[in-house]
Length: 230
Image 1 (cartoon, rainbow, N blue to C red):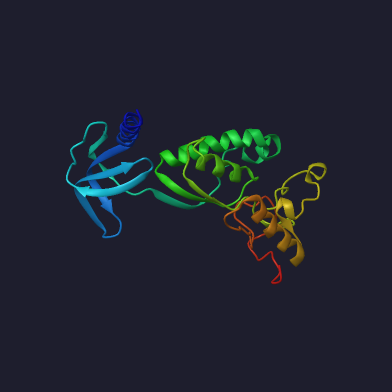
Image 2: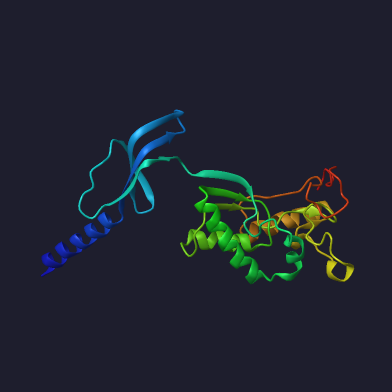
């Protein structure tokens, strides 16, 4: 009985392994290392990993899936080093900063992340948002939603009225008094606290807006905004 159970388990695991094995047959494959365009290639994928890239069209075995891209050109995933997955530019972007709740932003971010992936970007660096970007990264890594691999800065860090001050353009009764946790600093101590808060919140990188920006909703120009000690 034990031998039969062992054999059944082996057969079951083998079936799963084969079901997860995919052969991507590429008419053309761009090799970014050599700078060459290779023809008639097969990419072998097991689970979520590429295990080999073979010349010719590999014949599929029982249980293997073939993705026929013989009339297509295949290339490695693109990387975008400056994105903001929580939003997209539109005539309503500014007002939505005051009307959307975190749940609204999270649902939108999921849509934008999948859209980015389907455009061919498999890795992105998200350089500033409301903090939803960290949760989005975790959801993508857990396979709960579709999206690229994300390295995120969580919230950007700026000075009061600086490029990334989230209250720029707000009326006085909405402006409040943002501090280091919100990404607004005005001293060395506050700058250090903001960086440590980003680390605590799960940021992969630190984004500081050292100067004004072309999309700033403030009369801050393009000059430097931080002191050397900050």
